[in-house]
Length: 288
Ligand code: GDP
Ligand code: ZN
Image (cartoon, rainbow, N blue to C red; front, side, top):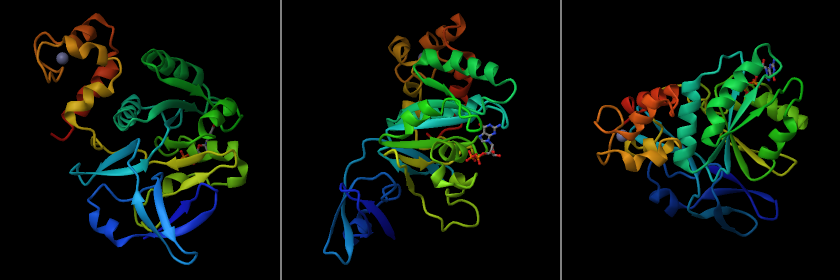
């Protein structure tokens, strides 16, 4: 129940949540990392008096998708880290995380780590071929050799960046390679999830010396639609957006309705079939 608050001066203080705010909280509304708050106090005890409206939110649903939990508030961008190999890149997972970013108003950037491994170039080129035309930047990096770390740094040294992606792809290694003084044990970021047996570890933002704040978000490796409503799913696919007006039926699911502009584009090959497959899988596994 105690939170660390960074003041505009850079000073850190501990604050508890004002009782009234506790009462007002509904599931999904708890104060989370990245929240902007107003604190009051007199040098001894501080309380969080107000939580300001969130500009962006990275969410996931919990317990089978009934309630939505905000993991990080006000993130400026999501660095979606994948490995070129070890572990093998999963396109479906990339698409799910892109949807989470799109739905929360967070700009996603795909970071392909482990570019030092054999075959990495072909993987990075394939990912670039699919995602760059959609407007997503695809960075190539290696925590091992330092390749691309300057550009990675540009993305984490300003505002709040959320690191997302499966465990083992090198998220901790990248932060370490960029600012070794943090000396995160590899795997440390993902252990902060609070899942598993040791649930007492708290979520936190890492303050980098370069000025950025970095949040870890879980690997999202389990199924579920993480707080994205069915009706908004299609608009989380940038390549679908210009087509949506062209479907004959309002609320077209783009699965089986006649005169569907999305499926027409799929047939013509202007929409990537794996992206469409990700859409279908998410829609069918989603909550109403
Ligand atoms: P995280 O779970 O995403 O935080 O991943 P870690 O940072 O713990 O890294 C997982 C494993 O990948 C560790 O054994 C790292 O040494 C290794 N690793 C991380 N980055 C690279 C890289 O750029 N190249 C290679 N070859 N291995 C890496
Ligand atoms: Zn349609």
